[in-house]
Image 1: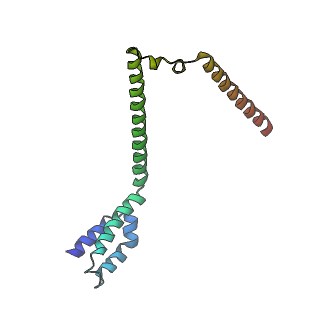
Image 2: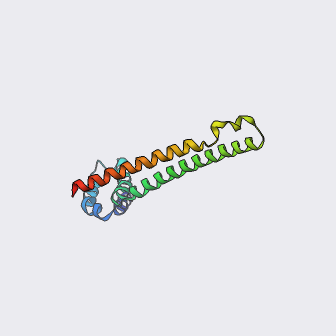
Image 3: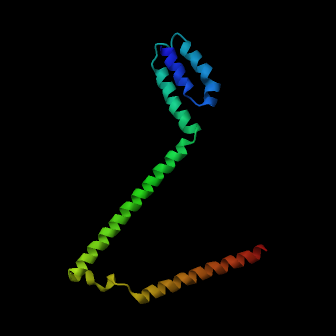
Length: 138
């Protein structure tokens, strides 16, 4: 019965692994000292999981799903935090709380225009440098 179960564990391995190591695994199982050792089954079971995970590239799918879940959770948390903060601020403004009417909280159009002009100047400089590099390469 134990031999049948062990052979079934080997049969569940990917074909390339089974063809390369299946007979060797069975010969190790058939050794008299190994029949009493339960770690052989544990080793075969771990090998089964490892071979399917690594050889079938399921680990890439699992890693991608885990990273996507982390990013989605982080985005959701940031969104809920920003939404609740802005809603609280709006409620305080509607309630007439003077602490939320500070001039520093309001959009300073002059500062915005200065920063926008700086951004455009930086982009223009980058474009100019790229064009210069293209001319040198020709």
